[in-house]
Image 1 (tube, helix red, strand yellow):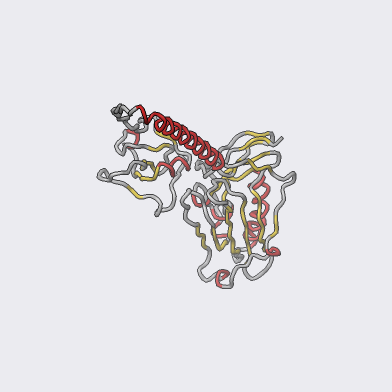
Image 2 (cartoon, rainbow, N blue to C red):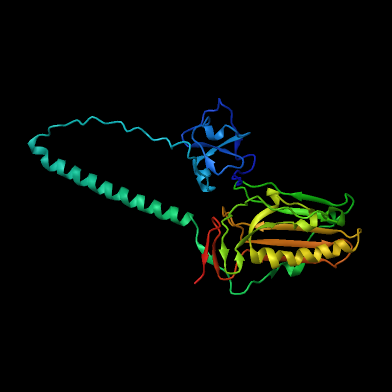
Length: 314
């Protein structure tokens, strides 16, 4: 199992055998695809760490109930029927009460229907891509880094933001230099980022495991904090075009530094990023300088950003 659907450290807590979970609490592992009602279920025997989350949170992250157990069911308690003999004069009143009960049932049925509609909206809608893929220039292409963040006193460095409550990657920052660039070939990626529902389309695979900071710049590969689900157009030629500009500049001299930041843009609780913002500034010159927004779209496809599902646009 590869998918990790846990949030930040504040959202989940490790549990021990003495922990008592309330009715809506379930148990999950760090990389599991299933949730468990029973803390001691055999499906959790090999797990190094077990976390407790609410059932609604587990379902919202796409986890399913483990096949090793069944969801707890509530026992129906049979109610004793008490038959009251009403006097003949109160027959009319009794009929009115029955009518009121029927009206109440109809109102309850309407409320249930409304709830179903709300849950349907929560599943998200499919958004069609523009006919032509376009990169948007932000702030007149000025990255906007402060003088303090352009300092090279600490040499080359890289920093990746923590995963959020929905296991989504956040901003990746770096002071790039030739020293950080890898010499080994990139290994296969095994992590499935949030919103990962890949499939074949006419042009090839719809999605790529997109690095926020490209592998050629820092050598980061299977790093949860550096990967998102990105369309082929977003990843290549989109992000690759700008990454190559930076890489070419860095390779030219070991004295070249580039302040770099890549930020995925998520809307509300959606698992698939709407796009990516890329910012770069070469230190001591303007040979590398850009501030752009790249949409996470694919021509001829409709994407559901709530969960990453897709379908062909007609």
